[in-house]
Image (cartoon, rainbow, N blue to C red; front, side, top):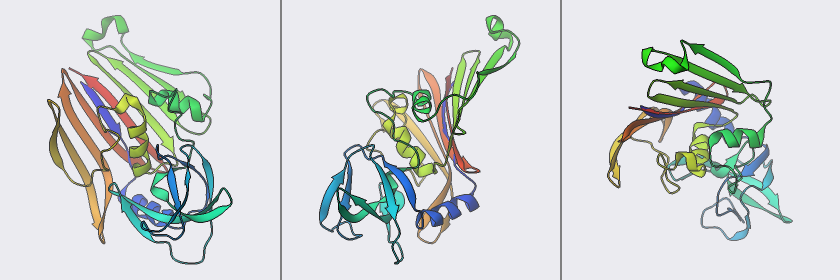
Length: 257
Protein backbone atom coordinates (compact mmCIF):
# COMPACT_ATOMS: atom_id res chain seq x y z
CA UNK A 1 0.00 0.00 0.00
CA UNK A 2 1.39 3.40 -0.91
CA UNK A 3 0.58 6.31 1.34
CA UNK A 4 1.04 10.06 1.28
CA UNK A 5 1.05 12.00 4.52
CA UNK A 6 1.51 15.68 5.22
CA UNK A 7 1.38 16.62 8.90
CA UNK A 8 0.15 19.85 10.69
CA UNK A 9 0.12 21.19 14.35
CA UNK A 10 -2.70 20.79 16.86
CA UNK A 11 -5.52 23.30 16.59
CA UNK A 12 -4.18 25.66 19.25
CA UNK A 13 -0.79 25.71 17.54
CA UNK A 14 -2.44 26.35 14.20
CA UNK A 15 -4.47 29.21 15.58
CA UNK A 16 -1.41 30.84 17.10
CA UNK A 17 0.68 30.26 13.97
CA UNK A 18 -1.88 32.03 11.79
CA UNK A 19 -2.09 34.96 14.20
CA UNK A 20 1.69 35.24 14.24
CA UNK A 21 1.71 35.09 10.43
CA UNK A 22 -0.07 38.43 10.44
CA UNK A 23 2.73 39.88 12.55
CA UNK A 24 5.80 38.14 11.18
CA UNK A 25 8.97 39.89 10.12
CA UNK A 26 12.28 38.49 8.96
CA UNK A 27 13.71 36.78 5.90
CA UNK A 28 11.63 34.59 3.57
CA UNK A 29 11.83 33.09 0.08
CA UNK A 30 9.43 33.55 -2.83
CA UNK A 31 7.73 30.23 -3.67
CA UNK A 32 5.38 31.33 -6.48
CA UNK A 33 6.66 29.70 -9.71
CA UNK A 34 5.52 32.61 -11.87
CA UNK A 35 6.93 35.17 -9.44
CA UNK A 36 5.25 37.25 -6.75
CA UNK A 37 3.68 40.62 -7.56
CA UNK A 38 4.65 43.57 -5.39
CA UNK A 39 1.76 46.05 -5.30
CA UNK A 40 1.53 49.71 -4.48
CA UNK A 41 -1.01 49.16 -1.69
CA UNK A 42 -2.18 46.03 0.19
CA UNK A 43 -4.97 45.21 -2.24
CA UNK A 44 -5.32 42.62 -5.02
CA UNK A 45 -6.48 45.33 -7.41
CA UNK A 46 -3.64 47.74 -6.67
CA UNK A 47 -1.00 48.73 -9.21
CA UNK A 48 1.78 46.16 -9.72
CA UNK A 49 5.16 47.83 -9.13
CA UNK A 50 7.28 44.82 -10.04
CA UNK A 51 7.40 41.03 -9.95
CA UNK A 52 9.77 39.26 -7.56
CA UNK A 53 11.20 36.09 -9.21
CA UNK A 54 10.75 32.61 -7.80
CA UNK A 55 13.35 31.72 -5.18
CA UNK A 56 14.26 35.33 -4.33
CA UNK A 57 15.20 36.01 -0.71
CA UNK A 58 13.31 38.99 0.71
CA UNK A 59 12.87 40.67 4.09
CA UNK A 60 9.54 41.77 5.51
CA UNK A 61 9.34 45.34 6.77
CA UNK A 62 7.56 46.64 9.83
CA UNK A 63 4.60 48.92 9.28
CA UNK A 64 2.34 50.48 11.86
CA UNK A 65 -1.09 49.48 10.63
CA UNK A 66 -3.02 46.24 11.08
CA UNK A 67 -2.16 43.76 8.37
CA UNK A 68 -4.94 42.93 5.91
CA UNK A 69 -5.81 39.28 5.34
CA UNK A 70 -6.44 37.70 1.94
CA UNK A 71 -7.45 34.19 0.85
CA UNK A 72 -5.78 32.84 -2.30
CA UNK A 73 -6.15 29.26 -3.54
CA UNK A 74 -7.91 28.41 -0.28
CA UNK A 75 -4.96 29.67 1.83
CA UNK A 76 -5.34 32.44 4.39
CA UNK A 77 -2.49 34.94 4.11
CA UNK A 78 -1.64 38.54 4.89
CA UNK A 79 -0.30 41.52 3.01
CA UNK A 80 3.30 42.18 4.01
CA UNK A 81 5.43 45.24 3.30
CA UNK A 82 8.69 44.60 1.40
CA UNK A 83 11.35 46.43 -0.58
CA UNK A 84 12.59 45.06 -3.90
CA UNK A 85 14.55 46.73 -6.71
CA UNK A 86 14.35 50.03 -4.82
CA UNK A 87 10.55 49.75 -4.81
CA UNK A 88 8.56 49.52 -1.58
CA UNK A 89 5.20 47.79 -1.76
CA UNK A 90 3.13 44.85 -0.57
CA UNK A 91 3.09 41.11 -1.28
CA UNK A 92 0.85 38.23 -0.17
CA UNK A 93 2.79 36.14 2.35
CA UNK A 94 0.95 32.91 1.42
CA UNK A 95 3.66 32.37 -1.22
CA UNK A 96 6.65 32.86 1.07
CA UNK A 97 8.68 30.01 2.58
CA UNK A 98 10.79 30.18 5.76
CA UNK A 99 13.51 28.19 3.94
CA UNK A 100 14.73 28.38 0.31
CA UNK A 101 12.23 27.25 -2.31
CA UNK A 102 13.16 24.01 -4.11
CA UNK A 103 15.49 24.34 -7.09
CA UNK A 104 13.09 23.36 -9.86
CA UNK A 105 15.79 22.07 -12.20
CA UNK A 106 17.27 19.58 -9.73
CA UNK A 107 14.78 18.80 -6.96
CA UNK A 108 12.46 16.00 -8.05
CA UNK A 109 11.95 14.32 -4.66
CA UNK A 110 11.54 15.61 -1.13
CA UNK A 111 14.80 13.99 0.02
CA UNK A 112 16.63 16.08 -2.61
CA UNK A 113 15.01 19.19 -1.16
CA UNK A 114 16.29 18.32 2.30
CA UNK A 115 19.82 18.07 0.91
CA UNK A 116 19.35 21.45 -0.80
CA UNK A 117 18.45 23.27 2.42
CA UNK A 118 20.73 21.52 4.94
CA UNK A 119 23.64 19.14 5.35
CA UNK A 120 23.09 15.70 6.92
CA UNK A 121 23.87 15.55 10.63
CA UNK A 122 25.70 12.29 11.15
CA UNK A 123 25.18 8.98 9.37
CA UNK A 124 21.87 7.24 8.73
CA UNK A 125 20.49 5.23 11.61
CA UNK A 126 19.07 1.84 10.60
CA UNK A 127 16.44 0.13 12.76
CA UNK A 128 15.08 -3.24 11.69
CA UNK A 129 13.14 -6.30 12.68
CA UNK A 130 13.80 -9.66 11.11
CA UNK A 131 15.70 -9.76 7.81
CA UNK A 132 14.97 -7.96 4.54
CA UNK A 133 15.50 -11.23 2.66
CA UNK A 134 12.64 -12.65 4.71
CA UNK A 135 10.12 -9.79 4.53
CA UNK A 136 7.25 -12.14 3.75
CA UNK A 137 7.48 -13.32 7.34
CA UNK A 138 7.35 -9.83 8.80
CA UNK A 139 10.82 -8.45 8.23
CA UNK A 140 11.11 -4.67 7.95
CA UNK A 141 13.70 -1.92 8.01
CA UNK A 142 13.60 1.77 8.90
CA UNK A 143 16.38 4.21 8.02
CA UNK A 144 16.53 7.64 9.66
CA UNK A 145 18.56 10.67 8.62
CA UNK A 146 18.80 13.88 10.64
CA UNK A 147 19.81 17.21 9.05
CA UNK A 148 21.61 20.17 10.61
CA UNK A 149 18.55 22.44 10.47
CA UNK A 150 16.46 19.90 12.41
CA UNK A 151 14.78 18.28 9.38
CA UNK A 152 14.47 14.50 9.26
CA UNK A 153 13.83 11.78 6.68
CA UNK A 154 12.56 8.32 7.66
CA UNK A 155 12.49 5.56 5.01
CA UNK A 156 10.51 2.40 5.79
CA UNK A 157 10.64 -0.86 3.82
CA UNK A 158 8.46 -3.90 4.49
CA UNK A 159 6.59 -6.62 2.64
CA UNK A 160 4.91 -5.09 -0.43
CA UNK A 161 4.91 -1.74 1.33
CA UNK A 162 7.22 1.25 1.59
CA UNK A 163 6.98 4.78 2.91
CA UNK A 164 8.89 7.99 3.46
CA UNK A 165 8.23 10.44 6.27
CA UNK A 166 9.69 13.94 6.25
CA UNK A 167 9.92 16.43 9.11
CA UNK A 168 10.36 20.09 8.13
CA UNK A 169 10.96 22.76 10.78
CA UNK A 170 9.26 26.18 10.63
CA UNK A 171 6.78 25.31 7.85
CA UNK A 172 3.01 25.73 8.29
CA UNK A 173 0.64 23.19 6.78
CA UNK A 174 -0.28 25.67 4.04
CA UNK A 175 3.37 26.25 3.15
CA UNK A 176 3.96 22.50 3.13
CA UNK A 177 1.02 22.06 0.76
CA UNK A 178 2.57 24.57 -1.66
CA UNK A 179 5.92 22.81 -1.32
CA UNK A 180 4.33 19.49 -2.25
CA UNK A 181 2.86 21.08 -5.39
CA UNK A 182 6.37 22.13 -6.44
CA UNK A 183 8.01 18.70 -6.12
CA UNK A 184 7.37 16.15 -8.93
CA UNK A 185 7.43 13.22 -6.47
CA UNK A 186 3.94 14.32 -5.38
CA UNK A 187 2.50 15.25 -8.78
CA UNK A 188 -0.16 12.54 -8.56
CA UNK A 189 -1.23 13.81 -5.14
CA UNK A 190 -1.74 17.55 -5.72
CA UNK A 191 -1.29 19.20 -9.09
CA UNK A 192 0.19 22.68 -9.54
CA UNK A 193 -3.23 24.31 -9.86
CA UNK A 194 -5.09 22.47 -7.10
CA UNK A 195 -6.30 24.55 -4.19
CA UNK A 196 -5.62 23.95 -0.51
CA UNK A 197 -8.43 21.59 0.58
CA UNK A 198 -10.84 22.90 3.20
CA UNK A 199 -13.65 20.35 2.84
CA UNK A 200 -14.06 16.58 2.64
CA UNK A 201 -14.61 15.52 -0.95
CA UNK A 202 -14.39 12.67 -3.44
CA UNK A 203 -13.42 13.48 -7.02
CA UNK A 204 -11.77 12.01 -10.12
CA UNK A 205 -8.57 12.83 -11.98
CA UNK A 206 -8.51 10.77 -15.13
CA UNK A 207 -9.53 7.23 -14.17
CA UNK A 208 -8.47 7.60 -10.54
CA UNK A 209 -10.90 8.38 -7.73
CA UNK A 210 -9.50 10.51 -4.92
CA UNK A 211 -10.85 10.88 -1.42
CA UNK A 212 -9.82 13.82 0.75
CA UNK A 213 -10.62 14.06 4.44
CA UNK A 214 -10.03 17.36 6.26
CA UNK A 215 -9.86 17.42 10.05
CA UNK A 216 -10.62 21.01 11.05
CA UNK A 217 -12.26 23.42 13.44
CA UNK A 218 -13.78 26.77 12.57
CA UNK A 219 -12.86 30.02 14.26
CA UNK A 220 -14.60 32.96 12.61
CA UNK A 221 -14.90 32.74 8.84
CA UNK A 222 -11.87 30.58 8.09
CA UNK A 223 -11.51 26.87 8.99
CA UNK A 224 -8.39 25.98 10.98
CA UNK A 225 -7.16 22.78 9.36
CA UNK A 226 -5.52 20.26 11.67
CA UNK A 227 -4.89 17.43 9.24
CA UNK A 228 -5.41 16.57 5.58
CA UNK A 229 -5.66 12.95 4.42
CA UNK A 230 -5.83 11.79 0.81
CA UNK A 231 -6.24 8.32 -0.65
CA UNK A 232 -6.47 6.86 -4.15
CA UNK A 233 -5.81 3.56 -5.90
CA UNK A 234 -3.75 2.99 -9.03
CA UNK A 235 -2.56 -0.61 -8.96
CA UNK A 236 -1.33 0.05 -5.42
CA UNK A 237 -3.16 1.92 -2.68
CA UNK A 238 -1.81 5.43 -2.11
CA UNK A 239 -2.38 7.65 0.92
CA UNK A 240 -1.31 11.18 1.83
CA UNK A 241 -1.70 13.19 5.02
CA UNK A 242 -0.41 16.51 6.33
CA UNK A 243 -0.29 17.99 9.83
CA UNK A 244 1.92 20.28 11.89
CA UNK A 245 3.36 19.42 15.31
CA UNK A 246 5.53 21.45 17.66
CA UNK A 247 6.92 23.89 15.10
CA UNK A 248 7.43 21.38 12.31
CA UNK A 249 5.42 19.86 9.49
CA UNK A 250 5.51 16.10 8.94
CA UNK A 251 5.00 14.68 5.45
CA UNK A 252 4.34 10.98 5.03
CA UNK A 253 4.30 9.27 1.63
CA UNK A 254 3.86 5.54 1.18
CA UNK A 255 2.41 2.83 -1.05
CA UNK A 256 1.59 -0.84 -0.97
CA UNK A 257 -0.74 -3.53 -2.20
